Image 1 (cartoon, rainbow, N blue to C red):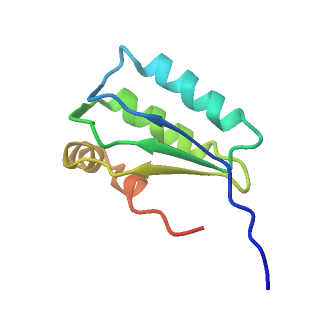
Image 2 (image 1 turned 135 degrees about the vertical axis):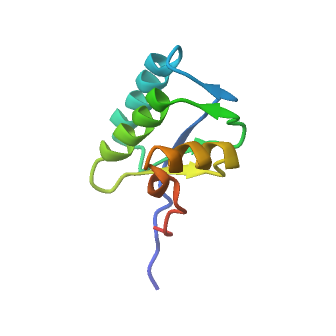
Image 3 (image 1 turned 60 degrees about the vertical axis):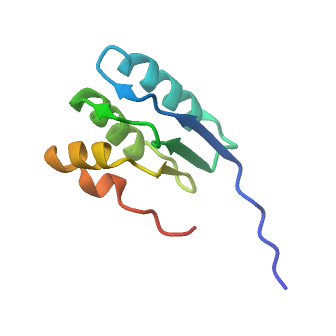
Length: 101
């Protein structure tokens, strides 16, 4: 029998409106989570996003590219508005359901 250690999960919740005005704070928050050596999974709760601009989408895309080996960034329940904005900007694949670890 093998035992699997449960991954340490960290997370943040996106606000209903993600704009360039908040992107510096979003970037800093995600960067701090990514820098945590114990965080194996970072969950970004997208359940309340009603509007998101290109700067915020780029911030999320950069974060997804910045994960370390053994670490993953998961977008939880992206709203139709978020998915539509991501598709319009060519970033739809970023929000595709993640495979199980």
